[in-house]
Length: 274
Image (cartoon, rainbow, N blue to C red; front, side, top):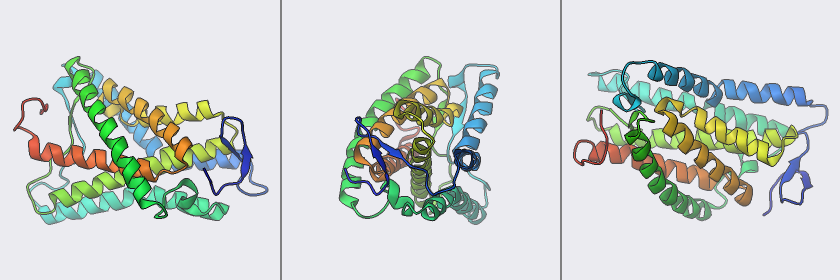
């Protein structure tokens, strides 16, 4: 696997990154990493933890409560609602642009350094589709089991009004989720942890636990399931050297979940609804 990065190849095939430029200390790298996380998934993790504590301390079991992923911002006002939806999607991508800027300034080639480009579209889409099929089927079974055992809230992927922009917005939301999560929690986080001298196992644990933590709002099942997904994604990223397949897989998973719920909720008995 050819990677456009400088560093020393270890026996495990792991690239130990050098510092991005002469004179940049590990303290500065740590500060940069913490700031990026505070503006993105780190803040989401803290929000999810607070939400989870609220759900645990609320009367009734977790499965009697619901976690809505895509809801209306302005009920009864579709054009204003659409404006808020697009605003939310666009602003959520700003940390990705920040990461791209930081990597470009570093001289690493921007997001290309983590394999998020158009150089291998069929590889990314093909591997991503296979990965989504495997994780999606296992994830659905795990979610239904976790909810049945009272370890998960009822996840409501969407509760948007029946308007013309419903499905386009759901697709855009799915793509936004996939880009933000895979670029930041896999590509960027692993790069910085490598540069800070973390071992591959420690970096894998950090990335996976972070992924699980910002899904805590769904319950214990959501946390565990996403930690497992995080482990798989990190291992595949180390193997492929590209986040492209991970972005494709995540986007497909969310598109199927969002659109599938919109089409099937209340029409099939096996799909939980509030």
